[in-house]
Length: 119
Image 1 (tube, rainbow, N blue to C red):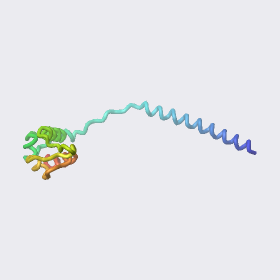
Image 2: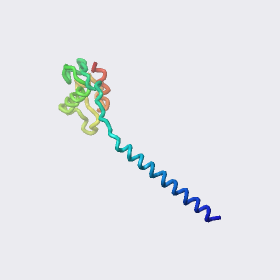
Image 3: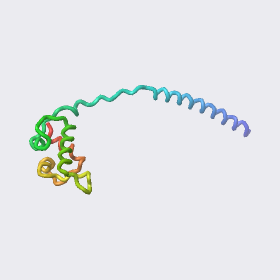
Image 4: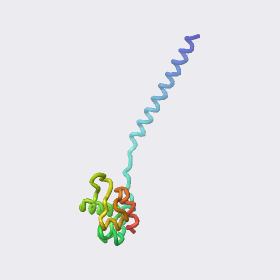
């Protein structure tokens, strides 16, 4: 009786092996599918007018949000306002203090603070 059980086990493993080959070929077919490029979101490129406080730093011309962040970072680097020990923090000068309302701000809060000053 022991020989019958081993014969059954051998036959079931052969069936599983055949099933896995079919799955492998199906996966190869999905990899060949061409991907399409992402289109940029037009909302990021919409020109926004800065408030008077922000305009004193980046200029009064209407710019997209991304450009406003770039110009603000240029101002921060030009005036060497990044904290020496913790580079993620920005020490505010007189103009930036009016913009952020704090003595020190995290670099991650810059974009959040700009939404109040761009319309």
